[in-house]
Amino acid sequence: MKDIDLLIKWIKEAQKIVFFGGAGVSTESGLKDFRSKDGLYNEKYDYPPEEILSHDFFVDHTSEFFKFYRDKLNVYGLKPNITHYTLAEMEEKGLLSSVITQNIDGFHQAAGSKKVLELHGSIMRNYCMNCGKFYDEKKIFNSKGIPKCSCGGIIKPDVVLYQEGLDEETIKESIKEISTADLLIIGGTSLNVYPAAGFINYFRGKHLVLINLDMTPYDTRCDLVIHEKLGKVFEKIKKELF
Image 1 (tube, rainbow, N blue to C red):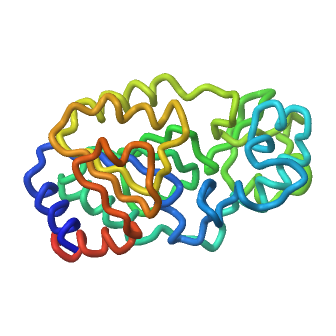
Image 2: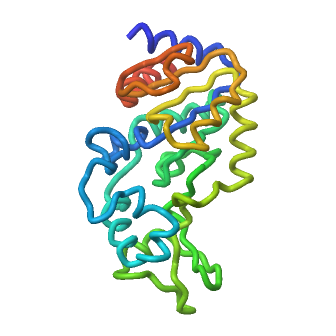
């Protein structure tokens, strides 16, 4: 627990803290991550998940895409966990500048976080590819087959699929947040997905902290690495700070 105590000390001393999170932030809410041994990429489907979640697959096998999407990315009945709530409380108390997330589940906002930079979009937003009309997540998860707009167009989730580029404004703001932070906390990510993982190269601050169950390519570059469940770490942070 000494490592967590050191992190809490750095949180108290920091002028600007940014949290950069991945799929591991939401696994304790019941969502599967992608790359761990129990993750989606190690399950068996007719197609590899990376292929299903690609732009080409969405275009060429739209019905199959939505079958996987409804089955594996539905967050109905799931709620934010202690990590989401503690981060929201840290922001409310002026201890956290922003959350940068690779997740698309909307849990950070549901927990109360205000400044959330969603690198890969959100399942909570969906739009008609024909007329641009927006729909919430219920339209997708409560429909069958290929979801259609009132105009007849296909409704696409506002998520960044493989082969698609990230939103330029989100990229700029994320890099700005990271490059001006003096404490960057990375949590629940394998740091294998680019370009998102490369953003941490812009960090010029005092302390780089990584919280992840498995080792990552960036472990040796961090000032502190905690191989623990995020929930355990943030439960102690909450207890000590609030």
